[in-house]
Amino acid sequence: MTESASRERGRELAQLGYNGLFLTMDDPLERLGADRADLRRLVEDADAPLEQRFLAAEVLFRVDRRFPPKSLAPELARIYVGALRDGVVAAANAWSMPGELDGPAGQHLVKLGAAAESELEGALADSTSVTYAGSREASIGNSYKYRVKDIAAQLLRAIRGEALEVDTSPTRRDRAIRELRKESG
Image 1 (cartoon, one colour):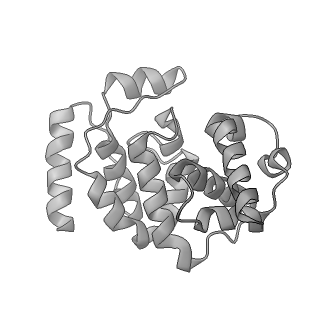
Image 2: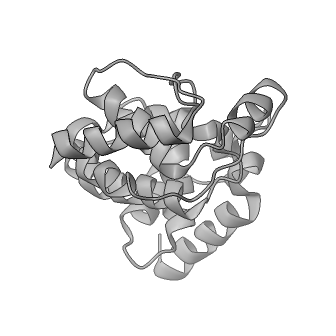
């Protein structure tokens, strides 16, 4: 794929967005007319926008059970945590709700294992609010006022094989996050 073709593929991904790619019954590869190699080149293109790299990686995670190669895990961790922090996916459901690991993007980040720990540790200070969509998720997630750091803490715990906790109080969650940061530091 040429550089201009890569940029065009990236624009297509961004135009469809997360919902257009994954919340439909269509196969994302067929919808894009892309092949895995095209998408992998986009993921590896450090000059491509974060959103495009993230969406290309999400497609690959879903259509290629061998993805990602271990060598790409640290870069994917930067992409995924960057996408979480930048709100690339409008609804936080894709990352999972604290206490659960049911969101595909969150599962993919956890699959990166130890390569993602330092990136997630960096997000433990990010108080940016996240918003959930749907009925149950929106009612619960939005009433608890979850933040990026709450999701990062849950994903970090999942990578480490620790219990996933739910706490309704942001103050208690902040205390637990401070402890988690001390353990990491």
